[in-house]
Image (cartoon, rainbow, N blue to C red):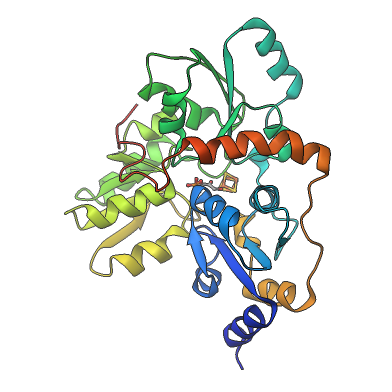
Amino acid sequence: MNIEEEIQALKKKKNAVILAHYYVPAEVQAVADYVGDSFYLSKVAAKTDADVLILAGVSFMGESAALLNPSKTVLMPEPEADCPMAHMADAAKIQKLRDEYDDLAVVCYINSTAALKQHADVCITSANALEIVRKLPNQHILFIPDENLGRYIASQLPEKHFLFNDGRCPVHACVTKEIIQKAKKAHPNSLVLAHPECTPQALALADYIGSTSGILRYAKESSHDSFIICTEDGVLYELQKQNPEKTFYMAMENFQCPDMKQITLEKVQTVLKDGGQPVTVNPALAKSSLPPLQRMLDLAAPDAPKNPQGGKRP
Ligand code: 13P
Ligand code: SF4
């Protein structure tokens, strides 16, 4: 048996399913039962009836799965794979702003630790942020931890007042305006599809702005046949699978999340075989961090809307 066949056999034996983010290596996506963006994976995690969930992604994804489905065993192929941005906010600063603004809603990107989520009123992902923040009755919004996603959502909701946090995805935030200009010059007939974790300067040059699933949807539905992709290069696997006749150029070389790329087939096989340490969240933290996550699922449409971010530039 090769490694892929062994993984399939182990999944059956253990009644396990593999949930993989679009940014993990292609060969891991290929053995997964569910592949998607953070929003999709959180919905699958909340509903699955498998006994074991193998979360091929970074630690906040495993933690969210454990919060949403506490009766299941959640295992990470690489427990050390972590999202640096998930830690980039400060409880004391959040409290200070709560004291200043009576009607403040703290909106927390799902790319955050449970320790951070417990300070939020609601969680969002890049696929549902616009829809959810628009529905909030609050006038003042504190967006944590991603300043770039926050600024993009603010640009689409001028009727609300936003406060931002000093945090960002180190992978998307390093795309400069010059990098996009260079890619456009090299491929003048291609449309630029960018993730809202990129800086406002980079997004200003994009033809479409959306979550990973939004980018996939746009590329599929567009009559255009070539695109410059401004997000993590793991998404190329699904883009090429869905659109074999279209051409995709990465906005820059090595557009990779080092943590997502730590997930290998060998680690998936090992965790299925040996079990490993299940992801747990202590009960007190689970009690305070689950409600904002659950509120996200309640407020978001049951199925992601066709064009979640509307594709508008800031
Ligand atoms: P989405 O999965 O929401 O598109 O977010 C991208 C990301 O950076 C995940 O870590
Ligand atoms: Fe975190 Fe960025 Fe990696 Fe996503 S791509 S896991 S936001 S560092």
